[in-house]
Length: 360
Image 1 (tube, rainbow, N blue to C red):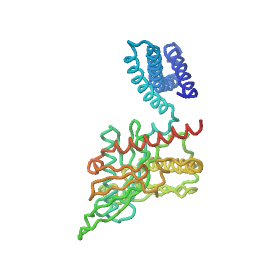
Image 2 (image 1 turned 30 degrees about the horizontal axis):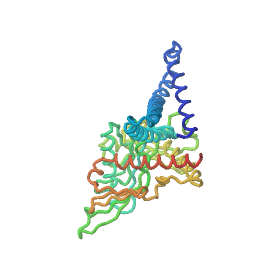
Image 3 (image 1 turned 90 degrees about the vertical axis):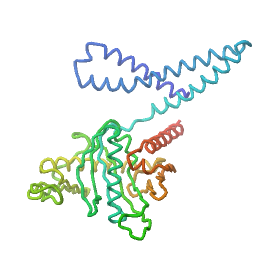
Image 4 (image 1 turned 120 degrees about the vertical axis):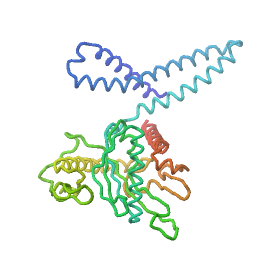
């Protein structure tokens, strides 16, 4: 293990001991905000320090076995102990390196997921509905909450555009690599000749902005219009000006929300989506600057970038960023995304580790 990594882990051990003392003191409950912050830090550090202690114990076991090599009667046992101990050390060292990787500060956030139909007309809109169902079922399996914020339905029951809010532990961390172009190859329901068509949708995954501090929006830079909602919803929703359209003049970003009967609720939802979109623009601008020096292996997340193909005739899904093909399309469309997500997270971690090695 590199001395720099060992030094960081030793510092974490000292910090954990410091937090243990503080949490056990009478001072801990004097300020609940500080208590929650310190408790959260303790929970993050503790498993890393525990793993480092196991690693050091495995190192000591290897050293003890190496000291037994000179004893002919113990040599075979010692060699076996050394081999297994070194294997454990290698596995734990990699796990510790991953634990020390810089954490995305947005990973713990809830998110807004936007799906827009692209090339393909009605078939693209139907595919947008399929993607929404896929992500919704994945969210349900992980006990996340899914709420439709805004939806523009197509004539055949798909979506021209749909925005949902997904809330739950590690929601953004698990779904943040889904941004980009999603392509489908299949025979559309509207195709009478049985020909395979290619359609596409774009997906945007944006961390939810904090109500205060994350994004500053000047009210003077907003144009807010109200209008009557269209589509399903009964008499009330269509007879009152409950729908809200907000235009952010400096960026030209436009957000509409009309799913709720309350104009106040629609405005609040639209403002939340607007803040997330502005934050997303800022993040992507920063990523573009960072990409000038180092391009992420899992892609830039640019929404025009084709990231995945869903081929129904062959029953396969291919993620082009990591050259991964799975022949389990039906399961994927039912929300079985863990294999894809885990592979993307692992590739991102590998790229981060390589970058840290390069910096060293």
